[in-house]
Image (cartoon, rainbow, N blue to C red; front, side, top):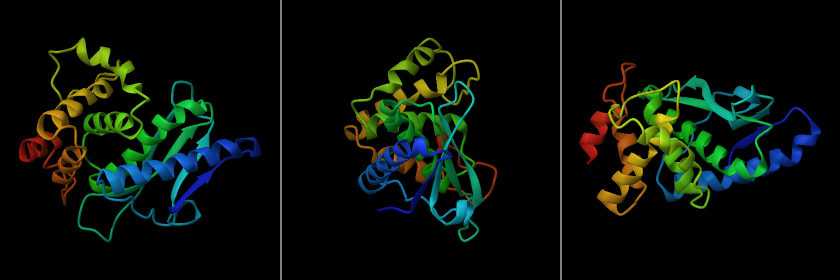
Length: 212
């Protein structure tokens, strides 16, 4: 249904690849058509086509997946980029829903503003896991690190705990407070981050102030 291609190294991963494609199609529908994120861009022919590529790989222990740069979008004036997704073949099927929703949102983020801070990217991708699959509640596991550090600023990125993931609760609060939980508020903040230079101005805190 969508220009998405799954790559897997072994035939025994075919069933997982098909499940991932199914989840991606549903996730794309929810995050773009329903929530309002702009659609993902073509990826400059990487992976054999302009489709969004998702690779099932044997990733190092502790890494469930990631989204990474493919190419800048030269046909737009903004500082945006296309991306690909890698998912660990070890991720259990039941956890793929949250993992796909998270990494796919990074693809959409990069298509808006590649140079936005990692902190806000992880805030948003963790928030949208719950918004896309409400019964998952995977973000609960990250809240302790955020709540244990009330003195840290909201733009803090920690390499020692899950603070920036737990800070998704801030986006839940803002959306609930200002628009009854509507996801469009977060989309509006991302669109206010758009820039034509590589210096991340405006950044997401400036964008928040503008939107709310």
